[in-house]
Image (tube, rainbow, N blue to C red; front, side, top):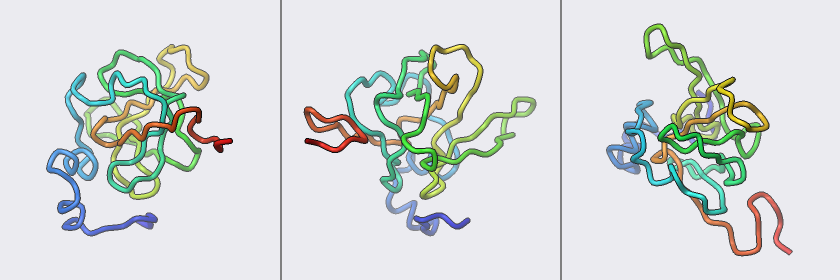
Length: 145
């Protein structure tokens, strides 16, 4: 599909755990309230677990109480891509994918009434991302010193 990081199905299966593969490459969903980043408040960035691309920053993470980590904006406008997901009959959603490798991250919802600047909730599977803690005294996306 023309992603910067492209691997064969066999390569993805070798590099990812069975559950990571199910979510990232087969558009699965982890159970609500079970992911390691649901309640994380540590300052840092969230990278794609499959390819390492920066996706979200801790400053845009908020408590939505939905059972998955929620962000109101990607780290960069080109960090993620979206497409229509009709996998649930009668309930179309918007799927969120890593723009670098095409891995499934979760879904984005609009107009739910959260007090965020974008009125968006990027509902992301913890297993699809990896948190990298910011160095003390720095904020993600800024130069130190």
